[in-house]
Image 1 (tube, rainbow, N blue to C red):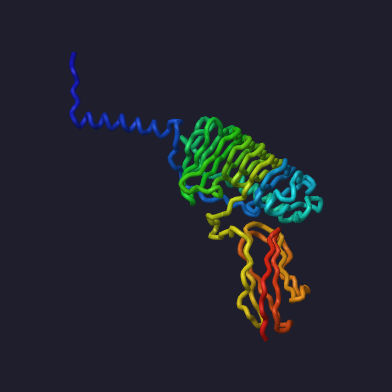
Image 2: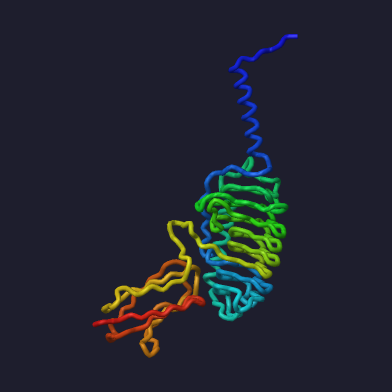
Length: 358
């Protein structure tokens, strides 16, 4: 029997090949981390981005929940927003008619635009290219519990489940995750989706072909864009948005917080808080500019009164989008003196004085 001797160079090449195979197997093993896919731009939610909850047929709540952000319903009547107490929402109810909860704002045209933007965003997510393959296609065989995923585009050809163990999304504050899900999204009770490395809920999008269910006490991150319905079971937390195109959004003792868009779309930054600035110039003659900022779409009223509280002018009385706003007041027809300008946006109220000197 002949013995085959390998040269040092041949043995090195052989060892390198074994190591290469081993490393490849490590990357695609189900145990953990998937390497970064191609970078993805943010999904532009348009008018739908102003909402924490937006649905087609029903928005229902079992107290006590806490929602930070606007709530909208279209085309169903406003009376299909049910179960909310006075202190459960920091934001505005928008409805297609006058049958909504106390304090709701009828705005059928704006809601029609927002629902249309849900469809645009859904199709954007579903149509992102290139089509995921390899480790980005059905990772974890459709259950990504216990995995750590870096940013990129992931595709699931059936239901996506997150169960067994928590999911970690790791990346920077500019990284974007998009999950294309052909049918349902199901998150098991008590599961947490955690963020690492600076990852932001504003940059995470779950495009759901049918409906999504978040289990009891789970913690979830990102915007859910579902063709049908979205349900948050008892005690579930969503740092993001629940946008249901045709069906219902239902919550039960849940916490929903619409994320601030710290990553810009077309370099337009959304403020984090309401704010009314001091007019400039001040004192002024005969005109001055008033600036204010809105963190979400709001019903805005900006009025001018004299020192006795008599209303002299209404500068704004309309629903305005989130962002920075400014308006000029021409006081040519008014006498020198001190005047008051008052901004009300949703439940936010701020009052400041200005001085006209002629």
